[in-house]
Amino acid sequence: MNTLPAMNISAVERETGLGKDTLRVWERRYGFPQPTRDDNGERVYPAGQVDRLRHMKRLIDQGHRPGRLMAASEAEFEQLCSGCTSKAVSDTATAEATVIGRAITLVKANDVPGLRHALNQAMMRMGLQRFVIDVVAPLNDAVGEAWMSGEFQVFEEHLYTEQVKSLLRLAIGSLPAGPSGPRILLTTPPDEQHVLGLLMVEALLGLEGATCISLGTQTPLADIRSATLAHAADIVAISLSAAFSGRQVRPLVIQLREMLPARVELWVGGAGAQRLSQQDGIVLLPTLQAALDALEDWKNGRATDD
Image (cartoon, rainbow, N blue to C red; front, side, top):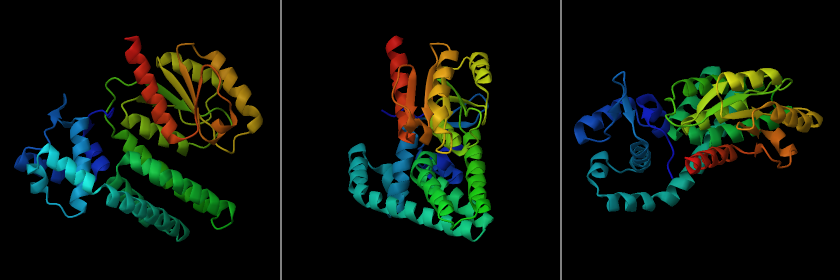
């Protein structure tokens, strides 16, 4: 089921790779897409139209003409999409590997403008969700391995991290507010300084309609509880990296669980989550996909309660 919220034109541009001017021209020339308007008169695109635009971009990249796609019946359009699936999968994997290799090269060359441009172009072309899952996640691993092996110096790892953080913050800032998603408080506990994983999860959850309230890193547990109450949060999500002390993980999570209201779910993500065993009242998110699955479960549970 497609649970994406409606998007403004900037978000559609990032998600589909289609420029704003192209979207406006198609709207005038072909009558598609057909956005609604928000209270400020800005275009808002329903999730179904965004999904179709995404498929159209893939078909156009393979040589199909926009006018032909606009005139196609639903059956014809589905047939065109299915016919390009295997090629698209192969091309996608190649494109992702190219972006990752290119980024590593640019970091090593200390080419900050080139790195920023390459990452931004990849996000525009792939869409935010695919960019986070298929590019940023494996790229983080590649950069970490390069640092561990001595191929990267510390400042080069920091340079990469800052560029990705800046890019994700800009993308998150332009996401439309979720109309019916949960209120999720995101942070890390004291002694956990890594914020990149938190931003990646915030981007994915925001795309799915969640209202994300980020406190940044190293928030004392008492303040996490206070913020949860102040913002009427439905979920508290904390990120624990591999660098976080393994001995502290379990007692910290148990203590935080006891401090939060029973109605509030506690999600624990990042490499640190892999050190925990499943227990009542705690949702473990060892992967980015697990975060999306947990959000879907929350929505389904709320629908059942209603």
